[in-house]
Amino acid sequence: MERFDVAVVGLGALGSGAAYQAAVKEARVIGFEQFELGLRMLNITGGVVFLPRNGPTPSSDFTKSLDANGVPYEHLDSREVTSAGLGIAHAPKSVTTMQYQARANDAVLRESTRVDRIIPDGNGGVIGNGHAFKFTPAIDRVVVELAMDGKTSDNISKFPIKSALAVSKL
View 1 (cartoon, rainbow, N blue to C red):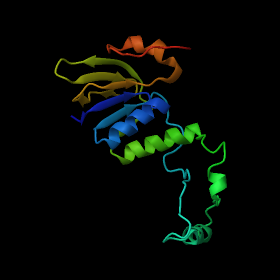
View 2: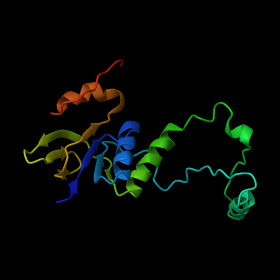
View 3: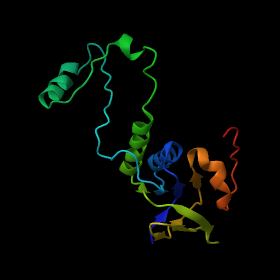
């Protein structure tokens, strides 16, 4: 039987972030999402490379390679990088990136797997039931992140878990 330290139910922004953060801290993570995950994991999502002026690696080393392979890019100067508006992340791509990074750090993410119930087994483990298949991951530390976005208050009562969650606005 597979063993996990952390189970994450719901892989939206909160759940994907929880899975990623736990995975980079070397926890054995399993995540469940009742729907298909958004963007495919191998989509190119871009990146930012910061190079100091007069540094050891000229930006032309990067741009020549990008040009040769037909990869589009933008060159931003220091004023453009610090201008207002650049701090807003594209939400679906951010979620996809966190899921990708969680998997890159050995998290197991199961999409199209609805979690109907979570039952502590008395030995520190958890038994759950999913629509797509049945799973019985043994979880060393029962840490279940209920990250169900706006529907959390509707769904949290289904699970026998004490939570400090307080819904301030629906």
